[in-house]
Image (cartoon, rainbow, N blue to C red):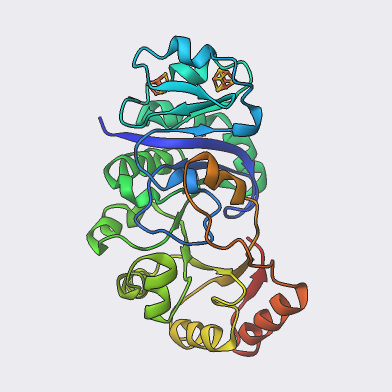
Length: 300
Ligand code: SF4
Ligand code: SF4
C-alpha cells in the first residue's frame, strides 16, 4: 500500500476550504517560491529543524548520536550533514526541543483513522478534509487512495495545489475532489521563473483543463509587494480567468510568519526587506476583481 510523507495533520482548520476541516500537510514541493512560509515542506525527505535559540549546548544529542554527526561549537550543536542519517534520535533526547525531526511516513489506513475522527464536526459545519503542503499531488498514488476512501465515507474533499504536475496526475484524482484551491502566483513567465523557479504554462494549462472538467475551483493569489501587487498582474489574471468557471478568488496578503523557519532548515530567506501589503492596497486589488464581476475575498 502507498505511503505519504507528511509534516502535520491540522485539526479544526478554518482557512483551507469551507467549514471546519482537517488539513494534512504533505512534505515536498516542485516549486520554490521566495515567500513560502513553510520551507520545511520543500524537501520530500525527512529533515531536522534546529532551533538555535533553544540549544544550551548541553551535549545530550552528541552523546546519543551513534553516527558521530554532532559536535558542540561555541555552545551550540552543529551537525555534519554528510554523517547524519536523519534517524531522529537527537530530537528525542533534547529536553529543550532544540532539534525537531520534520517528516512522518504515514499509511492510508493511519491517515484515514485521523481524518474520520472529526467527521461529526465536518457534518455540523459543512466542512471536510483538505490536502495541502508542500504539494499533495506529488503523492498522487497515495492521495488517490485516500480520496477514494474519503468519498466512500461521505467526507467533503479539497486539494490545495500549485498546479505544477502533469495533467495525467490530476486525471487520477479529479473524480474524488470536491474542491480545488488552486494557486496563481505570477502571470509574467519571466518573473514566474525568477521568483518561483519554474515556467507557468503547465499551471495555467492544468487550470483550464480542470475547468473543462467542471471542477469546483477557488483561485488563491498570494500578494507580495513589488512582485505581484501591481494592476498589470491582476488584470492579466482577470483576463485569464474571465472565461473560466471559477467560484471565487482569494487574495492572500504576504506575511512574515515563516521567515524564522528558514534558518532552522539551513536555508536563506530572500524577502527580508519586503513589507506586508496595506489594507488599502488589498482593497484596491480586490476592487478590480469586483469590477470584472468576479467574486473575491481577502484572506483564505
Ligand atoms: S540540541 Fe538539545 S541536546 Fe543538543 S546540545 Fe542543544 S540543547 Fe543539548
Ligand atoms: S538525526 Fe540521528 S544521525 Fe542525525 S544528528 Fe541526529 S542523532 Fe545524529
